Amino acid sequence: MPLEIIPFTLGPVQTNAYLIADPETKEAAVIDPAWDGHIILAAAQKRGWRIGHLWYTHAHFDHIGGAAAIADALNPLPLVALHPNDHVLWRAGGGGKMFGLAIDPGPEPAIDFEQGQTLRLGSNTLEVRFTPGHTPGHCIFYCAEAKTCFTGDLIFAGSVGRTDFPGGSWEQLEHSIRSQVYSLPDDTRLLSGHGELTTVGREKASNPFVQE
Image (cartoon, rainbow, N blue to C red):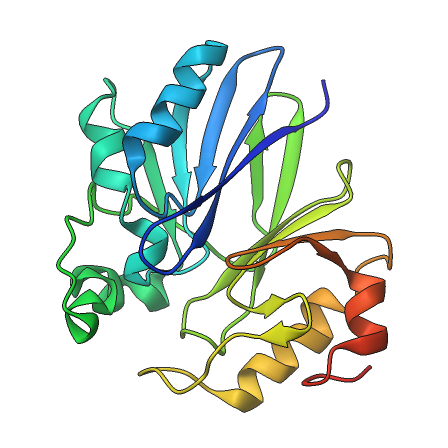
C-alpha cells in the first residue's frame, strides 16, 4: 500500500517530524523525531502502527529531541540510523548546549547511512542520498513511488539550510542541492525540516539561493 505520512511541527524551533508507515503491514518509522516524542508515539499507537526505525537526516538537537521518549516506550528499541559523519554531533547532544538546551539523544545509532542505500518499510522503499553542507553527515530520503523527498535542513520552500554552524559548508550545500534534489522529477514533493511543503520544480524556478 502507498506510504502514509503524518507530519508534526514540534519543539522550540518549530521542526518538522514525519511519522511514516506502510498501513498494510503497520511497519512505521519516524524521520527526525524532533521533540515531544510522546505526541508522535500516540499518533502511531492510535493507528496500530509499530515504530521500528528512527531515521535522522542529521543530528542537530531539534531533529532528535523526541527520540528518547519514543524509544523509552518501545520494546524492542527502534533501530536508529544516521550517517557516520554526524556521529560526533550526535554524541555532543546535537549542539543544543549552544542554545541552552540539553537533550537526551536516545538510543545510539546502530545503522550507518550511505549514498544509494535502500530503506524498506513494508512494500515501500526509500533511497538515501548523501547531502553534506548543513552538517557533514546530512542525508535526504527519496520515495519515488510517493513522489516525495524528505529533505531535512538541506532546502526549504524559498530558502536553504544554514552553513554557519560547525561542520557547515556553503559549497557542499549548493552541490548537494544541485546534484541530489534538482536531479529529481519536478513534481517531487519536498518535505523539509522547517516550513511548508514545496516541490522540486518550484524551487528550481524560484529559490533565490540556488538557481537552476
